[in-house]
Image (tube, rainbow, N blue to C red; front, side):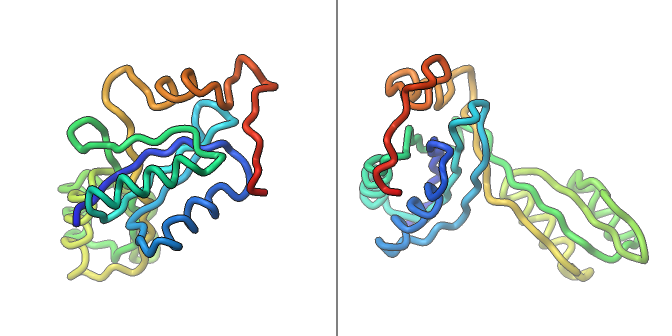
Length: 183
């Protein structure tokens, strides 16, 4: 099994996230990480999905995903061809050791009061895991971590490759809409 990161462009409409998640659930695949957010086009959202699958299963999942009416485009984000980051907010005791750890991992002290501090860190998965491992012996009081987000390197974009060829959610033609047969 190997980790695969998929970038999926979807129409920004109610129920799309539920349909995508249920596709994985029905097939018994676990989503390791899921991040969804708006894009530069308000009619399109982008999902970054991290899955632990074999190559053949990844092909099947991609094919099934693409069959969903609201899916516009899919691309696997190879580590070498993309920027991949996570966000971590963590509350720890405020002391010289935890401040030193924060500095070592380039974490920002976002809040400090009542003997605790909240750190903010953005980085690759290994860096975030390293920060958490270093802080753990000193007492992590609370943490929240985003899912992985990924962006292609270079000038090419997933939207350029998919929206221009499919014509879905195209800003230049507001009447060009894909019917939502699943609602």
